[in-house]
Image 1 (cartoon, rainbow, N blue to C red):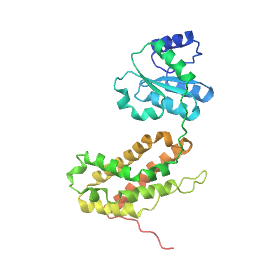
Image 2 (spheres, helix red, strand yellow):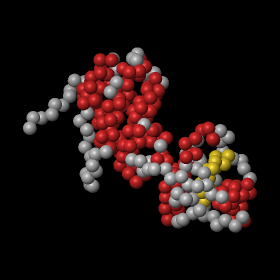
Image 3 (cartoon, rainbow, N blue to C red):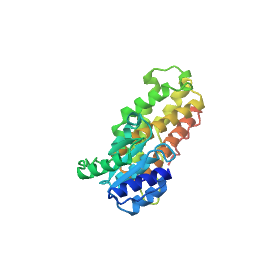
Image 4 (cartoon, rainbow, N blue to C red):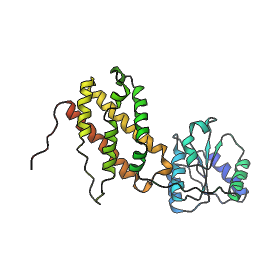
Length: 271
């Protein structure tokens, strides 16, 4: 059981032990992750805020991928938790809203263990596959975020002109993510014709350099938001290097677009 409130943690532990459960408790995410990776558990009960919002989500996500058969229960003090945390429903078996009686919690755990739900194994995907599958949604989400930006809306454009080379930029990113990974060597950024064209187009459309940077930043936020929406499908074994590649490739695309925008495109040397 994981909770940063000492009194709550003690009370819940005593109640569960009285009901016949063996309880191991942790006061924070770090302690919880150490326990999850070194010991085996049938049930995880974790608070959501410890003290940061979504700390509990990190604990549940780790348990789901390290000990997928364990029952996971999320505790939150927010009455509107079911609408605010829809994504967590993909990871947690049950959401318990404070205040609640500890006896009720113990009974719930008992009932859930007696009649466990059938685990549905979600096929795991690499980041590149998720981005490929969600490309149209990424473009739509990016456009929605851009339309909320006062800075970018100083320039009036149609949706088609606004998105421009975005699908091709995403395609180039996916190509790099799928490039063969040589151990001990980082993959090289792609020389993107789309990024060069993107920079020239934005200059003609009246973008400032700062707007071009903001444009790229929104893309990166949208890409990571897409991965968050697909957490249950992610192959976590390669998530970190893929995330680093996304950050590097989006930055490389911005650099190439900026050079094109400023009229300083590097030409490839003749062999």
